[in-house]
Image 1 (cartoon, rainbow, N blue to C red):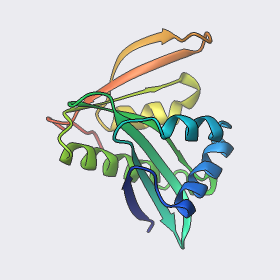
Image 2 (cartoon, one colour):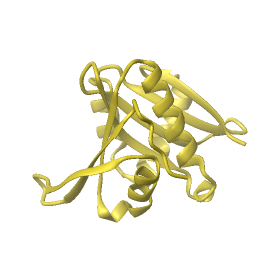
Image 3 (tube, rainbow, N blue to C red):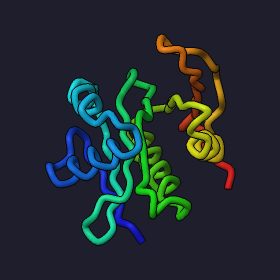
Length: 152
């Protein structure tokens, strides 16, 4: 069973290195992530580790006093399908709710179907679809942290 840790602000160098390494494997833009992360308000890193090795993460930041944004998340390929993403999401939502946020928002793409399905299973509703400035079709989702409607 993995251990879940959270960090308000930037995590220690060992954890950050693992996050950036995994992020680069999945999204190929770790430099951009780091550059943007240091500028985000009330950034939260949630990390899953097993045997002192990072196996997954979720990152989010404050949009307003009531709304939080779930930004990026990934799980090591050999640990996928084991519920790690759900554990990270549940943990992130609990911490954000305890911090007083009432809603959590995220965006994804059709190409990340497992993430889309996970979001819906955890109570997110699709609020809009749109094409971004690069012509990529995106899906916006929102979840109330007040009524906590989750499907198992």
